[in-house]
Amino acid sequence: MRIVLDTSVVVAALRTRLGAGNAVLRLVAQRRVVALATPPLFLEYEDVLKRPEHQLVHGLTPEAVDQFLAELAALVEPVEVHFQWRPQSRDPNDEMVLEAAINGEADALVTYNIQDFAEAGERFRISVLRPGDLLKKV
Image (cartoon, rainbow, N blue to C red):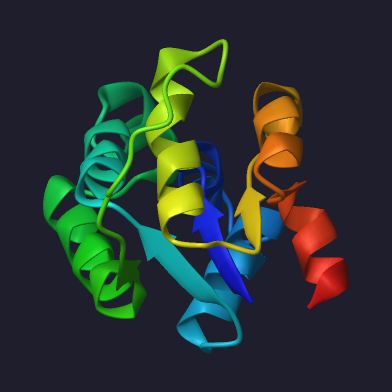
């Protein structure tokens, strides 16, 4: 199964090891699912994970975040954006997540923000799943 992870899932995964987001990252590490990302999406992961409010919760140093991202990058299949499909979402920040899913021919977009992606997911025939729902499918 080919998936795109919304930044909210990556952030939640580092905030707690007990949550569904962390379990999804473990599926990626075990290569049971293929995570897809464009360079702009991956840079967003870095930007958000290094924000002070998230560092306070996950407790990782910037160097530890860099190490995590290097390991994640080794697992991610890069996606080249051939077409931009904007605007499709109410939130402009969600556009790059959706474009990674469309251009990468993802089976699912995994997010905690189902409502933001539901209509576009339907339009492009991409399942929009919460992390827990992905775990049930796998």
